[in-house]
Amino acid sequence: MACCYQVSLGGGIVVVAASSFSVNSKLKPIPFLKAELLKPMASDLSPDRSIFHDASSSSPRRDLVFIVNPRGANGRTGKEWKKLLPYLRSRLGKNCNICESMTSGPYHAIDITREAIREGADAVVAVGGDGTLHEVVNGFFWAGKPVTNHNREATRSTALGLIPLGTGSDFARTLGWKNDPCEAINRIAKGLRSPVDVGVITGESEEESHYFINVADIHLSAKAGYFASRYKRFGNLCYVIGALQAFHGA
Image 1 (tube, helix red, strand yellow):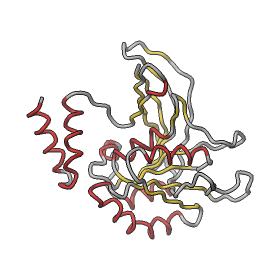
Image 2 (image 1 turned 60 degrees about the vertical axis):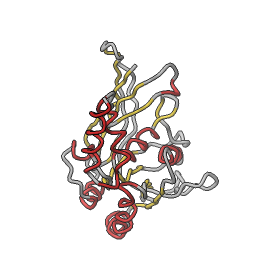
Image 3 (image 1 turned 180 degrees about the vertical axis):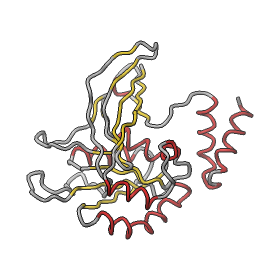
Image 4 (image 1 turned 30 degrees about the horizontal axis):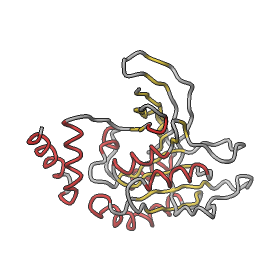
């Protein structure tokens, strides 16, 4: 089955909501699942220590978790992130608790996202390309359902944000955003929101659900993307190389 979840994007932030359809194209409405978009943030989430303020606190500051893939774009993402931090702190540091968390390998961003949401983060922001964003989006769900805050009395849901620092950043371009991280931070600071869809492909069990926010490809396009990932060191040229290799092996 394939489903479509509507998400609310605010200045590079995504909120998760839902309606679904089966692969035979018969529409099948599903209750709305809300996962609101606020502003971006990030941190090294420790399993034995909460990095967030007490939910009962009167502090107006927001907890923002920024998830960074330092190896993205052949290492360029980590370098650019370090240069970007002073500007990010100057724009958001006054009203937000800024936490950053570096991923250590594949799927790590999914775990960090789930923990951040359960701990009550106001927003989780993907810093990198479409691959990092894809993992963060999947972190908003678990066993076919949206991940929720441990604090059942919380009135705010966690938002999803994006600072494009990857090789392709196709999702950002699709929304008409420039591949400019400073501009993304300014959008986040303004808190602008707009709806966007999140798709999900399910297998025989809910645990096999796989979510996507940009595109889901099969056969030739999927092959091209797979081969392109091997040549990220060549920048955007990797997609040309991947496409040629996919055509040659099709």
